[in-house]
Amino acid sequence: MEKFSMDDEPYQEIQNWLFKSQRDLESAKVLLEHQFFDAVVYHYQQSAEKALKAYLVYQQVTLAEVLSPYATEFRYPSDIVEPDISEAEQAWTMTEAETATRISRVAA
Image (cartoon, rainbow, N blue to C red):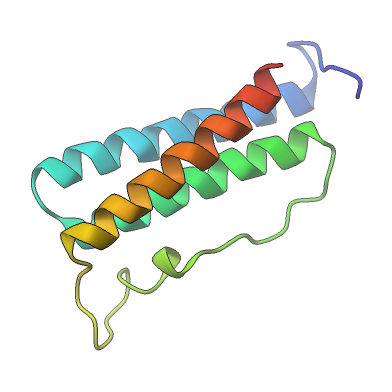
């Protein structure tokens, strides 16, 4: 796989996706401290999705919509208003691993 130079448009797009991924991750951490679990799992999901999109751009793959249940399940009104702490922790574990994997592959 040919590496992108810092001036290439794909490189800038990758950096933009990773920046937004990191912002969602940091937002989730702050929200977790305040026990806003519905927003926490949403931002964890968004972080993982944006890291995956960065990786797909790096691999020169056309971006497809990548969603987990956390993208909509707690974001919009439904029977389940908010996740519990175990669901928030599970979202964190999944997102942290996924994001770290994608970032390490892009950085390699």
